[in-house]
Length: 349
Image (cartoon, rainbow, N blue to C red; front, side):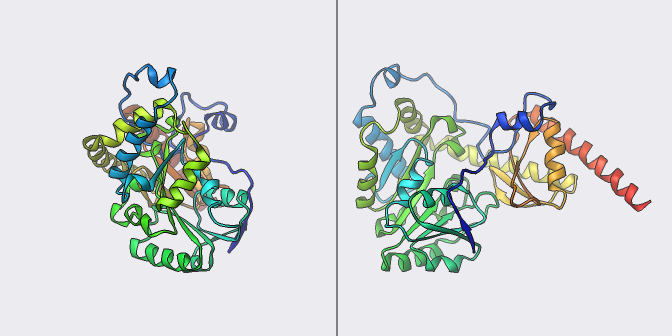
């Protein structure tokens, strides 16, 4: 068990940080450091009123109804919309009195930080069964960055135990759009003691829209809505959320496309003896002894992967967004693999 605090942590997706790390890199960067879909939902002309007027309550209701249907919540009354999932984290952690918060890790570090902000004593555990001792248990499912999935029946059993003692299970399903949806708890939130988080920007490739959802029992949703007050979601985010979440045809086609792209990425890494040991169809999880060398070699070529300072042997790689980006990645991997082979030969001599 690793005790955690509320310190700010580094994340992928910062081109400013990338330029500081690799000032001589080829521009523009191929940013594979995030798990955001590089093929975003098609942009469209927004109604002028989405910018010139405060959001109408009826439009927010439309968004909630579509989100409830798309995610499989029991009803719209079980869904609250927010300006991104990130802003929900400390509010959700504050739904119960401060106690012991356990995060199933290694995982997305912001959950631990948010729980600490809410006053909990926070620790990361690597054993699912240990979560039963928590007052607040947090699981990312599928997990970021390794893609681990916890089955729905195990999650429901944990939730029942926590609920019996006034605890709370938080399941972050940010990547469930590309995960095994039969293991989502979205349809179970009415039982109480469960909060499911869903992210809009990752799968739809529109992270800058800042839109996310919390799914829970009706009383908990009402508590969260009261904290946000009116106009919590901006007009443009409402419009994109309503159209994209209702577009089931685009979603199905995109899932198939992402599956093909992630399989292609696995083959490419395999050609250069880079082991892919997990992930989702939006990102691949790599483990190798010279991960730091690969990160640096690709960074110097203007290709940014996600590295983890506390786990130097792992990397996360998102999907290239164009054929040019695929070619740049292949070329950089080939150059790195050739140099690694030369170094290995030198050591043997």
